[in-house]
Image 1: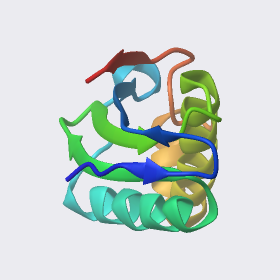
Image 2: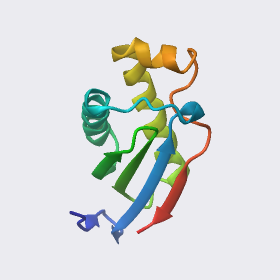
Image 3: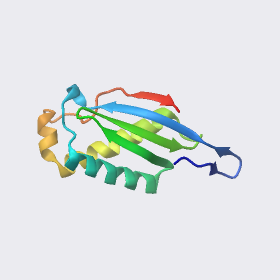
Length: 115
């Protein structure tokens, strides 16, 4: 559930819907990989002002409902989420890296909209 974020000079409710696709649209997300993704996102929340309200997978892509502050741009949020989740996924599941020919976890782009 979203909530107001109170800072010293502003109050905000900024919600973003992101869709990030796996490189080459490979079907790499299953229940085990999803669990690691969710755990990694919980760790991101501890370090950054990025709150994951919902995370859902559909085999070859992931939907994130994220709440953040006006200090972070949507592209900064996407870069943080994609880079940290990719590093952790490749560390814990080297077989995913093999499915992607040793390359990137995520495709270069992403979809984002305000909610």
